[in-house]
Image 1 (cartoon, one colour):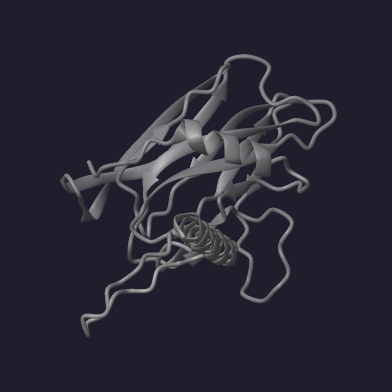
Image 2 (cartoon, one colour):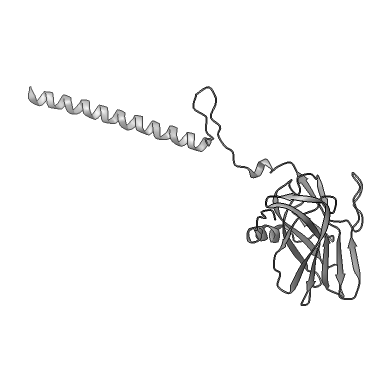
Length: 235
């Protein structure tokens, strides 16, 4: 199996801060990730009913761009089951070739489930494919009154969002520039490379230099005065 980055603890803080749903749809967070990267995805499921709770969630994984493995984060009061199925074309991973892919992940409530006016995050750690621009995750939500809601509709390009859209993850060609740390590259002509310097640092350096000049001048004047006094006493 390919190496999967398990960062549930760190990612959980960001998800809790950003995922409180002002929407009434099932969403995947984050909405985009880099192609071929390891990522933690959170399927955010709100309870839309006032007389029932959500006790089962099934997320289908893409078959056109299969994912070799999914690891689930433990959720108190819920059990998770990952179902796999053979693929026609073996999947190449960091650990070798894999002949099975994730078909779906099912979360079942062992307790009350998602209550009225509540939501739940269902997180998985996956290795994303490098040959896709987006991934769609059709999701089925089941309530304690027996009703099911199928979040499977595809949003047409440039068109309005349907009533029950499927969660979609956009895949990008790399990490956002906002997330990268600027680096300094040495020039090829042998000169020293310029580093990133803040204006406040420059101003502080100028102030220190001026103080040093003033102190040096005072010391020079004092030295000249002392020498003059010594000559007068000698004469």
